Amino acid sequence: MAKLSEWLDLPKRLDIPKWFDLVEWVDLLQGPKDPPFARNTLFAGESKRFWRVLFTSGLLAGISVLLEGGHAAKSFVLSPSARLCITGIAAFAGLYCLGVSRLFGLRITIAQAFFTFGFLVIPWLPIFSFIAFLGSNFGKLSLTFLVMCYLFPIYIVWSVAKGISVVSGASKLRAFLSLSALLGIMAGFGIYSLLTT
Image (cartoon, rainbow, N blue to C red; front, top):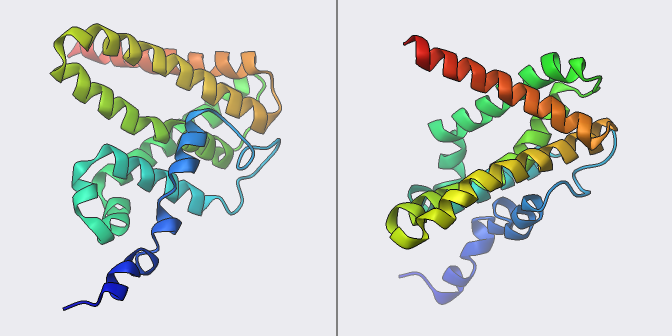
């Protein structure tokens, strides 16, 4: 049988402070702040923060990750959902950086776009999963949650635009218009593919 001191020492052995940071998660929900956002930052050394944000968001969003306890950090990072999320952010960052941002005169690297999108979009995943759960289970509050589902993305796009503005030094309006253009193009392709199938 394990001693009480071993149970009390469990958080240190699992490195909980290193892979879970609720304060950092909440700070990123509020938009770009320094650190990690600063003018012309290359996000050097920010990969640990990225993994903490990804894990904290995954832990808050998914019961399956929560139930895995001490192995949750390793299994979530290797899970297909995490790989899909990271790949999606990388693809979006590449499309944005190599295509649309140049049309609007924004100078931003793929790494800057990746970390900006990752830090400012991933923390919202638990919020949307929470809204989806509440919206389907509380009849009279459904309208409130429906409104939230439309208002939050507008706030997220504006938050990402502010992050791009900070990192690239461009105006917030140009960053917002460039993001809106990319989202419009993607929505157009999505609608086109739905109509042609």
